[in-house]
Length: 368
Image (tube, rainbow, N blue to C red; front, side, top):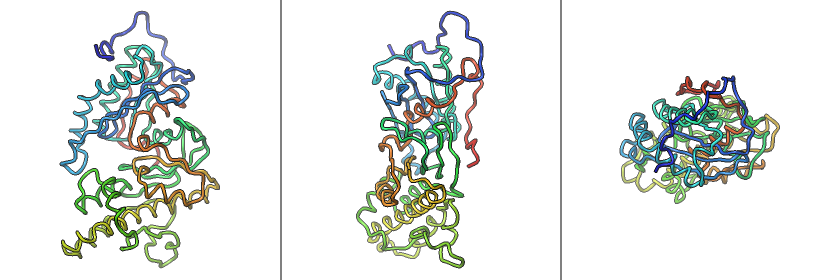
């Protein structure tokens, strides 16, 4: 029998009176679900932030398309949801009867994918009359720093992924202030598109990092590299060095133009150098703004989040800044449900039946 058999059954007795929200203060277990993109994730986290299980099922079917196809992602979430949740419960050696709170990503993300996770979470929570915590995906990335060896606020958090790149001033566990954002393409998208131009396939970030390890990061100059000090009036690359916002459209275009100017043989011979230089430009852009944000906010503690935080070159560069650095384990940097469960511990949850009317949102509700 599956751990989810009968998950929609309603227990005996009348439903408790509706309240606006409840704060999870128990030491019980949180079942978290994350389906914002193409990874179907479920996790069990306890009230102290100890990860009991963290199951991630990736959909490799998108590789042939060079990117995530939203409709295909949603359909695969439907196929995988029960299996992934059952596996998370089994690894945690628990059952739905011991879950005191259900947490789920409400957005931002792919709307079809989000709705699969949200509907599953509402059904599980309603079947047992337990509260449900709708979690912002970006708050989840910040909250990955509160798991296991917790990194307590206040600190600056750089979140860099395929869909988002931002600098967050974290003063409390349940909220953050955006001090810098991406005005066009996210850092993770820049990695993927650059890898595709170099013929490395999808997902491109890890492949580009491996190729870059064989090249010279100073072989080619791309916008964003050595951005610090380029913001003077009339200076080259001015658009990349102003304020704390990010822009990666220019570095993608620069790589495209560089490849167009090279023969196919030259591009193949210089592939490692191109990858290393391209990666260097993205990493320097991220590091430069993080360093200036630390100075501006007068804090000396920096955390990373998002899939790009798994990049080794970025981690090494951030260590050179001089601030106290905290980087979650690689499996907690990419999309996962443990970070959603972590965030849920610090925010107000909705009691039954208030969460039944919840909807997902594709774009951030914050002023990003």
